Amino acid sequence: MTDKTGTMLYLDGVSVAFDGFKAINHLSIIVYPAEMLAIIGPNGAGKTTMMDIITGKTRPDDGQVLFDGRTDLTRLDEAAIANLGIGRKFQKPTVFESHTIWDNIEMALKKPRGVFSTLFYAASTADNARISEILETVRLLDRKHELAADLSHGQKQWLEIGMLLAQDPKLLLVDEPVAGMTDAETVETAKLLRDIAKTRSVVVVEHDMSFVRELGSRVTCLAEGAVLAEGTLDQVSANPVVIERYLGR
Amino acid sequence: MITQALFRALDKKAIWIVAILLVVAIAVPLSNLMLPDGHPLRLPNYAVPLFGKYLTFAMLALALDLVWGYCGILSLGHGAFFAIGGYAMGMYLMRQIGTRGVYANPILPDFMVFLNWKELPWYWYGMDNFWIAMLMVVLVPGLLAFVFGFLAFRSRVTGVYLSIITQAMTYALLLAFFRNDMGFGGNNGLTDFKDILGQSISAPTTRAALFAASAIALALAVLACSMIVNSKLGKVMVAVRDAESRTRFLGYRVEYVKLFAFVVSAVIAGIAGALYVPQVGIINPSEFDPANSIEVVIWTAVGGRGTIVGPIIGGILVNVGKSYFTGAFPEYWLFALGALFVVVTLFMPKGIVGLIGQYHRATTKREQHERTDSAEAEAGIEPTNQPKPAE
Ligand SMILES: Nc1ncnc2c1ncn2[C@@H]1O[C@H](COP(=O)(O)OP(=O)(O)OP(=O)(O)O)[C@@H](O)[C@H]1O
Ligand SMILES: [Mg+2]
Image 1: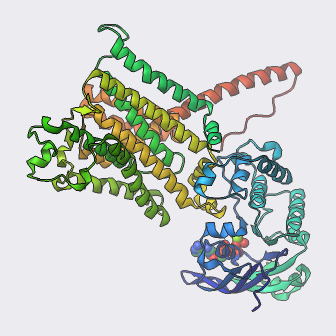
Image 2: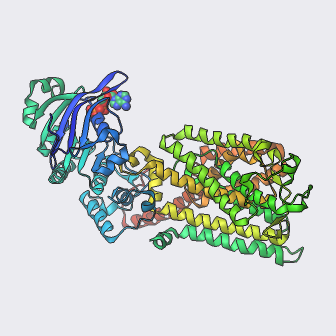
Image 3: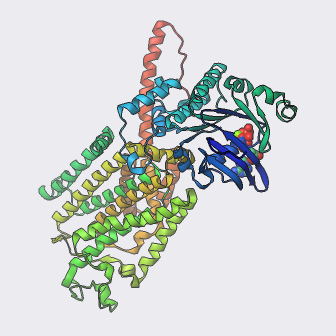
């Protein structure tokens, strides 16, 4: 892995240890523009930790993390990274429960984030139209005035996906998006993510194999903080090491 | 843009509070000054500055609520900003005494003459000018909050640790202001005021004017806070309160959001302190006592945090209670205050306002239910959709 030009996300030799325990161990991953990458792997493989590193929550001990082929993410904090155009959906859906569904999207909408521009912000017609459109996409438009706290687990997932869309990021990191969703909702989510990946880079972490198959993307299997296998889903799931360490269990 | 923001801030509740405060600002002085002695509706002279004091406490509680109720910053040092605003006003009032002091020194306040000082310390210069003093009322608490907040929020000091360092801040100021060589009158503080803006400070008209000024200042603070909390920034503040880290991942600089709330709040507290001092006639270091700041938290909790009207109700009611208690059974006041705090924390986490809201919702829900129940009974259907229990 040497050619960084033309990459959207470039991780090379990244390691991080928590109290001596190597959660990420020499991890190297590349994602190109308008490409989707699905990441699978057993519990504790380091999938969420990898996202923590990319979004500035955790500092790696070692290795290179580049965005857009040039911006070193290890030097930036969470807000700066988010403003570069990296959006994240958390494994445990985190929405702002005491706000309405509409307000959750409005806060996420890509707009100047400064204190005073936020204080004097007045939604334009275009902004309102965009928020409605996003809520339509995630099927929450008719509940826009309800509090986010009143949503089911699956609906919170969708609201968070809606917030991701509102941020209009170049790179989306989506951690276990279909937990708590019905089969029909899972299929819908896969379709939505495929649509998004036509124009942006998307990294999806998921355990649900039928969902990963729906995504139809390149697959990377992580284990113990490093890449175990890469390729199509069929190639990866036929890999004897993957079967032994992950699928077979 | 700004007018739009203001317009949005004028939600119904804020308009009501402002309207009530303006009525009070007119009615109380009128009743005291215009009605003849012995009239049943006439407020006695002593009541005017007392009620004015309650209003400044309400304003202090509102200031705390902006940071605590809306932004999740539990400051246990807000009394410091109030006291600093009070000292700035006190310095102006001291310089108005002039040759009427015991030592009749035209420049130096009595305590400086007593300490054998020959010259006015530099930070007393200009404080004989009302407008410069008022500028300091706003500037000094704002600047202290800015520096303190910048350091604390940038280093991501939160929760209990932040509360502790705010206590440490006000305690350090308490000790500093006790010292005679600070030049603020040591443990006696600043007192024996004579005039404000050329008017005798104890004249009924001056007291009525100070009362009106307190009510109007509180109304303006309500407008400002309402504008802030109803703006998108206000929503982000609540987001910071509920899920600070998530807010960062949306790209908001949490430290600046907090800093903004903290500075605005400190300025409001400073103005409240400046209005407090001429009405009680003294400012001394005990205003920096950490226990005072904790009391403000109790007022806010009792009234209902995270609302505009809650801290105002709490600030007034608890202090009316305090006036009564310290008169009737002085030794029990602290026990009563402690018990109040425990009861509120255990049984009414949203304070008085929350209780009213709950009652209101319960009755409207019952009415709705009765209506749908009877409709269903007529149609011969079993009621099925029970309301979901609150999580
Ligand atoms: N901040 C932290 N401090 C200590 N240990 C941590 C920390 N974050 C993660 N770990 C550990 O690192 C390992 C990798 O965790 P991670 O959450 O990245 O796994 P994952 O692949 O997302 O698993 P899952 O599929 O269960 O979500 C785990 O053993 C976890 O306990
Ligand atoms: Mg995980």
